[in-house]
Amino acid sequence: MKTKAILILAMSLVMGVFFTSCEDDESTVTVTGISIDQSTLEVEVEASATLVASLEPADASGDISWSSSDASVASVNNGVVIGISAGTATVVATHGAYSASCEVTVTAKTIDPSETESLNGSNYTIIQIDEASYGAISDKVINDCRPDDTNKFLYVWDNTFTGATSSGLNFYGQTESWVSLVVGSAGWSGAGYNISSTADLVDMTDMYNNPDDYVFHIAFKSAQESSSYLLIFADGSAECKICIGSSAFTDNGVTYEPYADFTRDNEWHAIEIPASKFNELGVFYNEAFNDKNIFAFLAGGTAGTTLDFDAAFFYKKAE
Picture 1 (cartoon, one colour):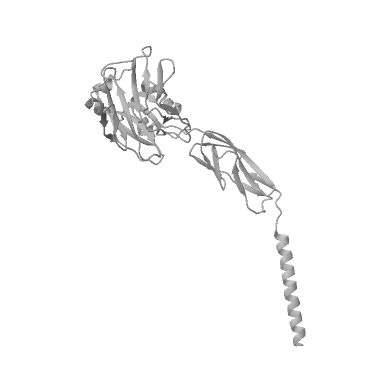
Picture 2 (cartoon, helix red, strand yellow):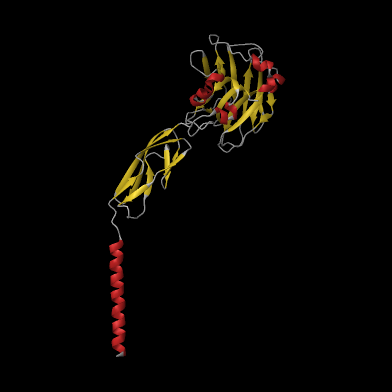
């Protein structure tokens, strides 16, 4: 009797496992498709949005993988899409043999001058800036000195710089490029923004009358630990030179100690030079002028030295 009881117990356990297995198999829902809650999506550069993917039928479950056709435009992680640069990309959600897609359009970052100190001023004399940022302050520009290759030019002197490819976002978070140059092998380097004799006169006399209200703004970035640049400013009758960098800059036997430096982390850093500094060095902008280099720069004679700058302009700071 004891042996018979043990056999019955064993058979009961086997049947229990069998029926439990059958119940588990019956509870598994076969996936028949996948969908995304949006077929199109628009997101700004540096902004994010979330896509939700669902398996079909509604009670199906399983892993979903995500991918982007162009991660340089839009990246995706578990449905969270981040705008990287202006353009279009297809984001795909996949489960096994099933997939669904969403067409993503990444647009330029909106410029709000009221939220950006260097764009919240007035009386701008622009040397270099991207189109979106220029458009945001165009009604406050009094001198547009950007090169047009007709009356205003950016000249590289004696081919001492070569152009580099700028990638990523500029100082104002736009995908538009900036000035990116590399020192060649001539033993020196230089370039300048020339206002020709046929260009409109550059009138910065309000800065002469109110030097405490004005600054020159420029942004740099670099991953090179030791590089220095000499910025050259002219007002039509005089010029001055200001060193930006990690060490002094010597030009034609004259040594210029650094006025300022910036962190070498390959991120953008702004430097502002007050108009009173130009006055101290003998440049006053007290008369309208043309037929001059309004702004020029040297980057030394070490081949391979990079010079990346953006957002170069004079302006009257907001009170």
